[in-house]
Image 1 (cartoon, rainbow, N blue to C red):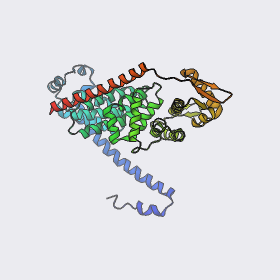
Image 2 (image 1 turned 30 degrees about the vertical axis):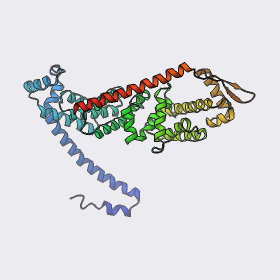
Image 3 (image 1 turned 120 degrees about the vertical axis):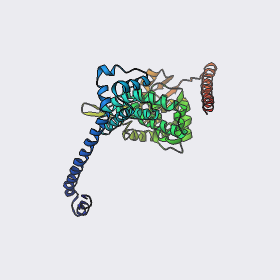
Image 4 (image 1 turned 180 degrees about the vertical axis):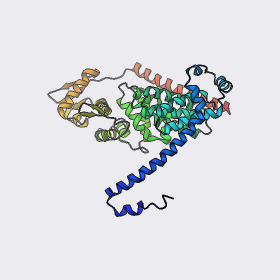
Length: 398
């Protein structure tokens, strides 16, 4: 009735926009009062439904009666406390409502307890997603990582009604994981471990190629050169026409096209991307200054990627040309290269008179090449065997 006779939409166009604010504040305040009454009423109803089980969980002596056996717990709760499936389901709804109201701590606790009693696998999975979201929103990164790994195990082992549902679950998991991986101290290593697995990488290429930005960033800033990097470059090469992103294009410029001028341009674009990305552009306050640590790491390692690749195909390099490709002035480039030679045992020397860098030949001997090829063949064989076993298990399950 009130909305039917509300004249705000007719009056507002005739007013200055600042004069509209008092009208909107009045409407918002009235709506909030009505909404609050609705929320309080629903909360009380849910509390009443879950009250017996909540009282049990808050009773330390009673809580100790629970065991690892779910069936025993359900029977014990029914016999001694008259708590049945209806009260357990009410606990789920109560926890869900707590989450919706922003009480993430309470929601996480009740969802944990619910999963310990729930026998419905789908409902238990839903509760685990909610628990993960609550831990992320509370920024409990260690616990969130544990829940993420638990959820991954279930997704990888659960029988889904359709393979597409399993793929979608993996895509959701990877998107949610970004909050954890770019805040956890070991996240940049663990994102490679997850995203670069065949099943997850296939899901990315099929339905979410934009996630390649984060995997590429992790490879670039990760100090340890990983053997998976060469395989990842092949993925970048396959997806370069279907996914446009400066960070993946930067790698393609260096390792696919060997276009160092374009790599220099892309490096500047990468900086802009990082600063405007909610996961990569996290700022850290230091006194009166604000920095973006990942941007600095990215640019440092990006220059190293350019330098290493450029040196691999040139024996004598003009310092001025290299400085330009690294987006540095001559003096900065010289200092950066001297430091690099000292710290990374790079086989090179600087000819100050000629203004050049002279690379020492460093050819891999035949034994090292044989070892590298053997490792690669072993890895491919392992993947093939796993795929055959999975196929055989799927056939047996049918």
